[in-house]
Length: 88
Image 1 (tube, rainbow, N blue to C red):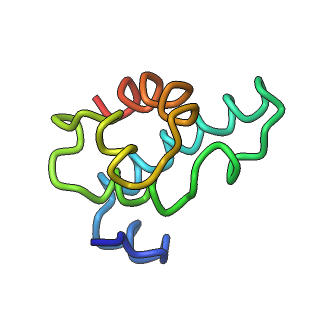
Image 2 (image 1 turned 90 degrees about the vertical axis):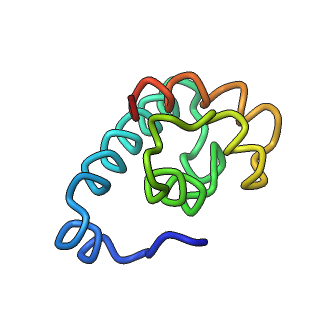
């Protein structure tokens, strides 16, 4: 299932998921700056939305989730630890 793209919907109807998504975006922006890699190259925004949209994302194996969503091995290696910390 794909998460909705409308941030207005997230904010109004699922503020806790919206807050988590914003934390993930902050981390991704920092990694983007550190590696000089555009955020949308680091990972597809839809994958991050899907992660934050899942029920109880804190209990997920983020690396496995990213892999199932089609992320490449280098993306998983670079991002999974940081995203795991953010959603806990």
